[in-house]
Image (cartoon, rainbow, N blue to C red):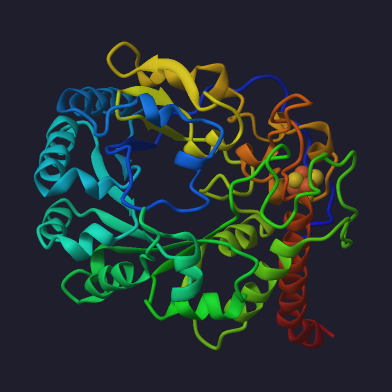
Length: 419
Ligand code: SF4
């Protein structure tokens, strides 16, 4: 049971593996946003492809994407598929288009697979348009809302185009979602980490909205565009950080460690925190569902508003056109997408890591971090360790030490009995 982050790294699997079927289909139903967040990878990153795309997904593209999803589900015997409504801001499509879109996907998938709908939104339109929640409820759409902590911290980044903050409107949406009539639709909160914000104040500000789950995200960054506050991180390390030791400053690990200790040490479970739960599961020999840590093959594919089949949005932070595949729902199947070299490169698990990560004792837990965060233009593009390597190493070691301590305490009485 690989509980220790300092055990030997697993051996590389021999040869190539079969392509992994997609289970998550992210539909970009609206390509524009009603906010102008300072860190947005969609509009502020290297890839500017949104400028050439239609504002919203046309009905014919929705139907074509749904047919392709149904075909893929039948080919792979998938009883259910996850359909993620995304943007930009997906709720800008409005209640009527949303109803039509959800109806089309449900109708086309009937008899092939059950769609599980989710949505990521800034929540503002939920607070402004009372027609939206009933539509989302009819199709069981689970809603994740982006919130960055206290009003001041949230409004520092998540601003409207005229510079006004958005916390108040997002808070109103969260009050609606916490109403017993809608609570079953509330999936959780997504918070982008800002190390200038106090970690405990941030965590407690998020808890005030009783989220079923928290996603704490590292800001998208690469070795070419380093994380906020770490301008010197421009060259990937030649070796992994030594076990139990820190190679350099790790402010994101310090922030996350503080939240982990508060969350893990709480007398009752206050919420789920995906990053911590996944690291713990990986340390205990399980798997991870997200791409942020671990070596699980990617099973998410994106359909842009114009029908282009692409990889995850986070790659927009690397270079123009990075998420592109040249495939389109009107011409290509998702089987062709799954066989595309760009997706295959992200389905190779340990074998897909670069040499530094392969020699790292934490590789089976850290997994080299998010694929986009490995981008280093001077090397083999995505084979460097994550630009958050130091932070991930410290966090994995910290959580591993805490788990080992608890397991030792739990097993100590049994040893006494045995004696
Ligand atoms: S990114 Fe993760 S797996 Fe790679 S060297 Fe750093 S800590 Fe190890």
